[in-house]
Amino acid sequence: MATSAQLNSPNAIYVSKTGECYIADTLNHRIRKILLNGNIVTVVGNGNAGFDGEGTPATSAQLNSPSGIHISELGHIFIADTLNRRICKVDSNGTISTIGGHYFYGFNGDALSPFQTYLYTPTSVSGSNATGKVYFSDTTNNIVRVLEPYCQDGLAYDSATSTSVTDVLCNGFSKFSPNVCSSRGKCVATNTCSCSVGYTGNNCEFVTCGWSFLHISSSLFWKWYLFGCRQVLM
Image (cartoon, rainbow, N blue to C red; front, side, top):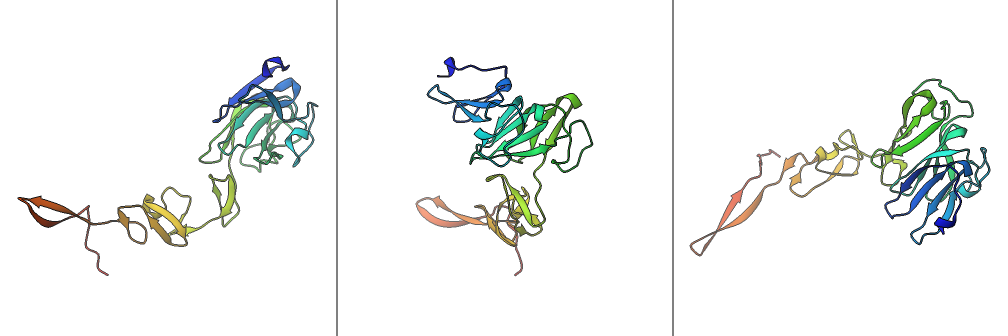
């Protein structure tokens, strides 16, 4: 049970949307989780301080004084691996990888590849489910920094899966853009919009017209009404 477990300088907690509690057990060099039944388990780290295990199961990897943790809606675990000077990610399959930081530490500038960027004791970490951006405090450098998803040409970031996918354009906008299809529909194929109810046109730029019944003195008439409609020459 969690109340019988030994922790060592826990520095951060995160409660998931399912109610499970994650703990950065800093000087035990682990990330632990309290289950809904009250039991505690290790989800990241083997308890030995160091850096080892890139691309391997998270429970067999080494951390070094992790002090920040964030869980995404997809269940990915983001860790500020403080004395390894790295930001790590554990995907939903339980595999750990570095997403930012380098063996060397200090400050060597911004707008670099995350794997070439020096950090200096990163601590707190958080993230945006909508954009995929990961924010963290680079404590000894006295700055807050952000990791932004990067996709090669022809690919786009899909927040629903947290992956790069083949992009599709509708009238010049990515299907993931909030402005695609005039913000009134979805881009389902190249230059093909599926418009929301009430809109039409190749780019969902027109408001549709409708009709209603008008009941007067027990007589039934047709009455046309417009929603900002305009005549379009075909």
